[in-house]
Each structure stands twice: as structure tokens, then as C-alpha cells.
Length: 210
Image (cartoon, rainbow, N blue to C red; front, top):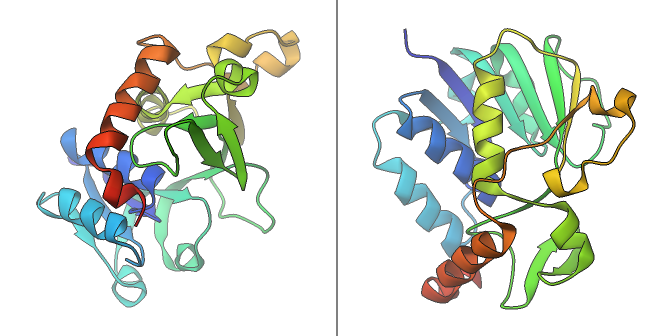
């Protein structure tokens, strides 16, 4: 049986990568987002061609039930989604009550294709972070490594209430903290992943700026 998921903010760059991975691996995905930029419109077309993805409205989502809800950041429509389980991706702790059977995943410094950036670095949480800075090199996690980790969580029966994702380069914490932390495996060195992202940025520069 095909697993059905709902992803909020599905054309924000992290949401796009999540949706793209899921439909490439034969999950049935519905999503909600408001298309306000040329980049979002382009990302919507990239996944919209796949029959496993549907863009829904707040009205239609109330008529369906899902195996899992993935809250990417925050969105008002989440309260209308009926799902057996919920994963909430956030940079800190949510400021309001979440559905039962929810796992909060505190995100690391994620980077990847389509993120807000320029040739020198990235923008995250209203902050500019250079690619050659200690912050980035110590804490950066490539989006594909994170998605692989997330995919394992989606398919597991073990759902803790809180997980923090951290860079493997920053694996120097007390044992108590490690119990709540996951360190995605780096498939490639961070420098190689930055090179891929910069090449993508050069190719689609106009869309990044839109």
C-alpha cells in the first residue's frame, strides 16, 4: 500500500526537496503553498508533472486523511489536515500546541540547491553565513543528507517526541544529549556539496534572485 503524506510550504526550498524525494520513491504526496515568486512557480512545475503529487487547497484538504503530515516551518492550514502521525520541522521549539503523535525535529544549518544565497554564502534565519566561515563548516548539513535521514524516520515505527539533527562535524556532546540527536552521514565532503550548489546557482541565477 502506498503511503500518503501531506507537506506544508511545499514550494519553499526545503519543502521542495522533501516532496521531490518522496515522489521519486513512490510516495503519494499532497502539498499546500502559495506561489508568490518565479522560483516557487518553477519548483511547482518540476514536481507538478508527477502523478504522485497534488497541490491542494485548504478546503479540499479537510476531506482527506493522510498517513503522515510533514509541517515544514509553520502554516495555518496544518490544523485542517488529518494525519496518523506528524513530523514538525523547525529551527526552534514551536510556539503553539501541536497534534498528538507528533515528532519535533530541530533543523541544523541546512544548505542546498534553491536556498537563499549568493556566490559567497547563504541566508538562514535572517542571517548571512559565508561558506568559508567556521559556523558553516562546523554546522552545515547538505539537504540530500538530511532528506535521507528524514526518509528513515518517516518509515520507522519509533517516533520520539523530539529529535535534533546536527552536523557530524559537530559530534562532541555529552551522552545525554546524543540520545536526542541524529548526525546524518556525509555522503560527500562539505566542500564538494558547496561546489554543486554554486554550479546550480550559476546555472539558475535568475530564478534564485526572483
